[in-house]
Image (tube, rainbow, N blue to C red; front, side, top):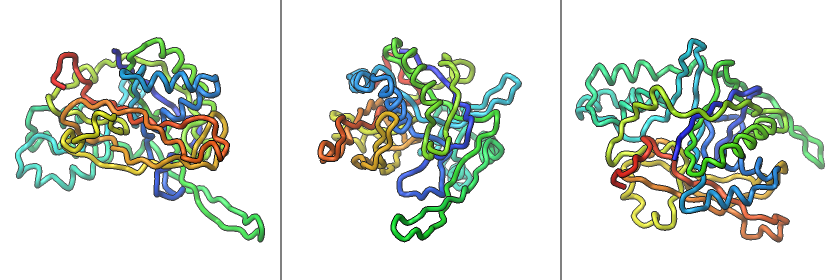
Length: 335
């Protein structure tokens, strides 16, 4: 089982929507369930959607993907990769954590080395915590810029107009999003490479009709440098993906996690190149940064509408709740 890193450099603005939020707001990252669904639609164009869904529904899925997170290439051989802030506090004295609590909670993303210090077993002193706060509080301020684009909607009957706005994100030339992928079956590497290239042409996220979300993708690169220093902490795994428990994990799921947050996952169904007006079933999924006490696996969840056939939908619809954990579970570790 090998883990690889890849980068997406966007050729156009992006719009990553969120459930319950209007189009004026765009997220800066993309969840693993949305990314997996987009790739399944790429496979559908090749006529291979059923094969990839079957491969992901296995006891040991062919591959598991993290969500996409920001990176910045400083063009001097150094690339900064960010990770979500864990929802638990770092190991430090209680009074010290209390005095720094507000500043720590303001951090959205952490440098990889700061992330590993945060989840490590070594207690952090005042200087270490202050360094984490200073380095990460404004780290991404020049990595992208947001914009509100005006739009007009016309009533079909009266032709009355309504003005609304769509939020978009422009990544700097050297910035973009990266992901991690763990292969159980490396025969899928070439297939995923082709699916990513097609997805780069189709676009990722919303508002693709307007040419948004197109990108170029790097090769899958083995983890190196700072990633080789990932500490293994028994009983502490941070989710880097959306998560929905497998059938045998539902009982006592709250006891398996030290800290977690949920988001309601909903939206419209896209089938291959075709967008539809059909809504998939809603799910509550754990989000990135949730901290598990043991290794969890998750599953592919069917979200096909109950009246799908009556509405003309001829196939099932799935959402990925497969867990991608950091640090990577090590062979022989207590699970």
